Length: 141
Image (cartoon, rainbow, N blue to C red; front, side, top):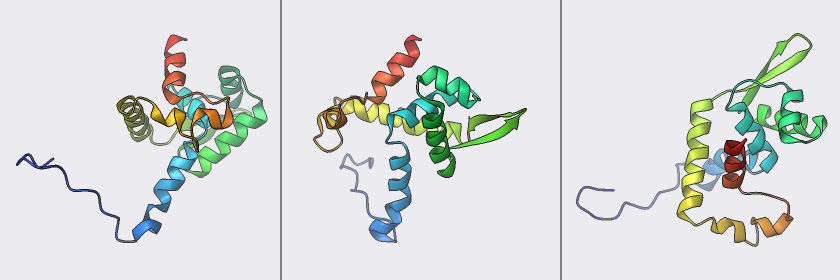
């Protein structure tokens, strides 16, 4: 906000217009699945094998592996071999934690109104949980 008390200027589109926002949209799409968020959340605590993640999240190994592949293709996670297993880890933990914290603040600021959104809200698919609820559930464990 400017020091003179006037409201901030509205954001402007980058030089490439709407198409320049495509990478950001792809990033947010990679974060749009509750299972991928759960995987990322577990990886904030350190490296995990697929088997560890399937036990924590309670989903099939093939499901977790598919989500890890998506996150790896997006550059959010990587892996290193350890014996016959692979250890998965966050590639940019501080930046990812900043984005997730900002999402939490935005959810709090909007009163979680997105949960009621007819296009993206919880009623659309029925079984999704909010990131805040997932974070709360993780902190209780």
